[in-house]
Length: 64
Image 1: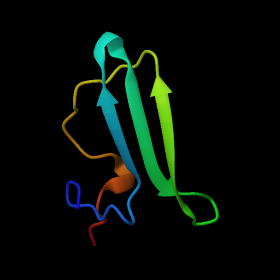
Image 2 (image 1 turned 45 degrees about the vertical axis):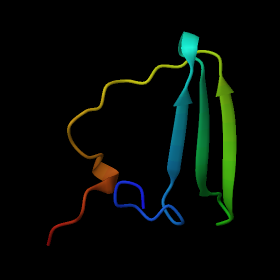
Image 3 (image 1 turned 90 degrees about the horizontal axis):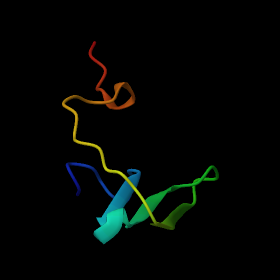
């Protein structure tokens, strides 16, 4: 589990920062056909913004 999420089912992004704002971003998610896959992007310049307080609307639990 990562932050309470089942990594076998959730969309997951792992970012490894390097000097000069270089990064490797690994994305693990299901494609449109439901096949789980991994994408690796090597980025020559990237920005990681500060964490914001709150939850994105698409991940909020519905209350009844």
